[in-house]
Length: 126
Figure 1 (tube, one colour):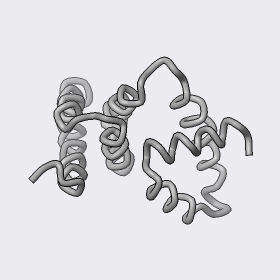
Figure 2 (tube, rainbow, N blue to C red):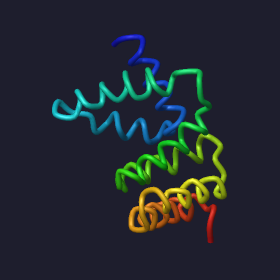
Figure 3 (cartoon, one colour):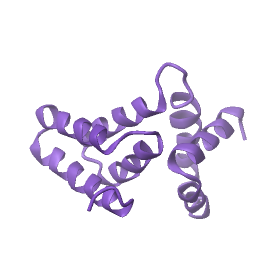
């Protein structure tokens, strides 16, 4: 395992949380192993490891970009990541609200719905 992959795995444990990482590890197989290695080395070991932005800012960017791409599964993951990285409910709300003007109402509504589910699961909304 390369240093960059190991660094990426450590960052994943920190930002996604240990339990998520362990579930991911347990479900890794011959088919999905190459894309997971790519994610560990490049997305987390290279991009998330850079010093230019705080993790909180990276999380907010991910929420906006994933809304633009309409990727609900990843929105769920990254709302949790944003909370783990110190984003407040209000900051998540503002990031998602910002997307309505640039990504469109349907994408924004989907992300709001998913974020609301996650926030309720985490006990941050009633």
